[in-house]
Length: 171
Image (cartoon, rainbow, N blue to C red; front, side, top):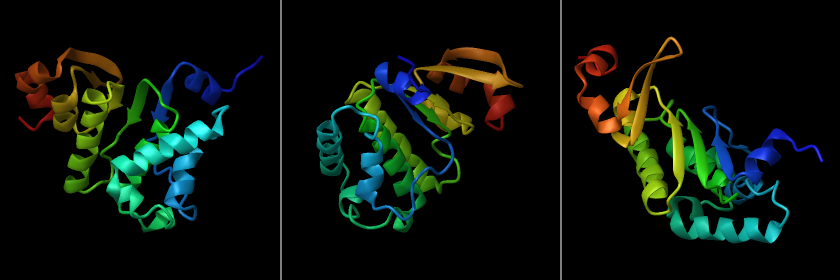
């Protein structure tokens, strides 16, 4: 049996959260959320997980029947992350979660990711151009220059590293 890339990721428990806006604007928040479970064999599980997410995130629950286009940038990112959670992955690949967001929403998104990492024990592999935010979040960080690993280490250590500071954190 040949599996699609999405089926392969789902089978091994990996969910990918795109950098680009991937919300379906004319579908409701609930419909968007349920799209995360389209690949599941048991649709009941997708509905159960969606309900759990609505219980956890009031911002989404309050807008569940509204079209996703009414959401703020931060709420859209929360919906994208939550949609991936419907698959119940053990690993989240998150591409540029802060891109295009206002600072207050960047903090909200990182708080959500931290909760998933600590409370729900999700492994999160993150690509983030906001070096300070990414390294504050990271257990282990890799600083890339022109696609090559320039410096690697614990996130906290990299934040204190003068070379990282000079190159990426504005001194």
